[in-house]
Image (cartoon, rainbow, N blue to C red):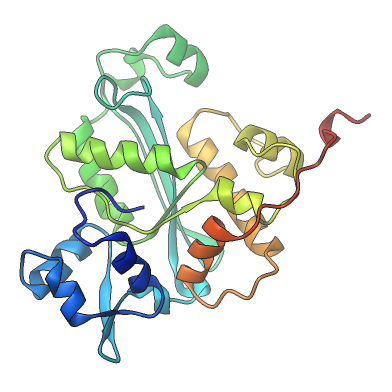
Length: 262
């Protein structure tokens, strides 16, 4: 999920994930020098490497067991980036199925709608001693680094964070992404795929507090492991997993809700 500012067209991006992009095509689409382009991309979470004379995303050559995945969740005081902001962010780094580090922070804000407080339990008073948005996002970016960004309905979290970074003067994200909802639809037969439903159905997180960031991250972590366990495809690298999560046929949903069956 690359932002609009990324200079390469969709065909070139696709080739970076598969058979490689030749130098002349790459250079024809960038304004700066090749070395500068590679360094800027790396700083924004995307590593581009050269193999056998062609350029690739490094995730094409990273085994799933060796990759670092960053599972992320945010809570916001509203859905519109123009009017609202992140009020809580949490993430865990996962490698070979194990949690290797955690990140969690509330974010200072002067306004939280009572409806949002009712959903999340977060009030303005809870955030008064929290760091401001720019500080939190700078720390989160250092934590995220070049890991693969995972979230349930990843488009919202990834886009909101990336645009928030730009609002406070930071660079947008370029990290490769996986949607845990889309991956679950291709690996787990279920009646519904909302995170709260999957938690009840699969017993992913016994201490879940829905709509709190670290709780939802923990639940998504359990779902990600379940999806990998249930995946029957032969996936050789991270790009194979990304492609599978986006392009493989969805499994047929259950017609009867098993949770309601007595």
